Length: 369
Ligand code: SAM
Ligand code: SF4
Image 1 (cartoon, rainbow, N blue to C red):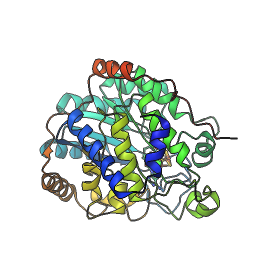
Image 2 (spheres, rainbow, N blue to C red; image 1 turned 45 degrees about the vertical axis):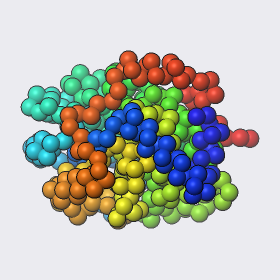
Image 3 (cartoon, rainbow, N blue to C red; image 1 turned 120 degrees about the vertical axis):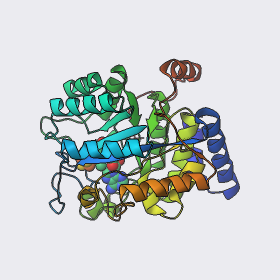
């Protein structure tokens, strides 16, 4: 699928054509990653963050948030729960928190890998090369870092560099692949200022980056952030601005599946926040094959509110586990067993070589002049 085709799907409104897109994505999901839905236990280990992302409730300047950093014992207790619930992976996520030190994290990863059969996914922000190397050597399997948008002008506005800390997430993603992590990335959908053209470029970049995991979710306005306060001023002209809607999110999930058929794609919490009753299910029926039940202890959930009214904030780990499994079964799908690894690198390489194209280079989006 080239960028123009992607663009025309993003602009498509006819219900019968959209049914065709859902059908194609679901068929590609079944053919490439099967009927299992993998559960990744999410542990939000710290809400401290040095960054100033204009969209996020954890940004350093947001004072009205009770910050926390979990102890090693607390994290290991959550990991034990993941094993008890039969999950194959734990995802350790946080703000960019340098209170999480390299060696402390490496020890924790080594212990989890030594004591359990779990895959360990990290999502700890833009950490140094030495940190990423140390954690990979300690046994971490995967790393998640969304590039958020490939439009560099927009990116600089919403994700400012810090003194001495420039931000080049695309470079880090390439480095993670070199270090042989399974690499996950993705974007928010409907960021004020995000155009259909740039979103089409984002989706073609998923393929070029050869992602193992793709997380996409709607941008949700947080009123106590710079982006939340200036949403209207920052928006693109109405005919170009991508809406942060449920429908647009399903389109991007489906297109992500079609451009990266073998990737692991979650039906995200942000989607469930827009449609609590059926958002997760529709995501799973339109290309997704992963869900991420929240294992974070209840007393910390409010301290990790990246946007208001986040789904699953009051449910215990046991509630989340039961709810996710019930939803999977209700769709006639199977609960994933094992780690749910990405396609083997050799299969991916072969697949990629066959599909290499020159019209979607692995570079940022260039705005038309
Ligand atoms: N600090 C790490 C990072 O930025 O990669 C991981 C944690 S961060 C909270 C995880 C993701 O949350 C971000 O990549 C971003 O896409 C998403 N996020 C933050 N604020 C959001 C918002 N207002 N609406 C939707 N998603 C948001
Ligand atoms: Fe920090 Fe990540 Fe939120 Fe940015 S998106 S402020 S890096 S937690």
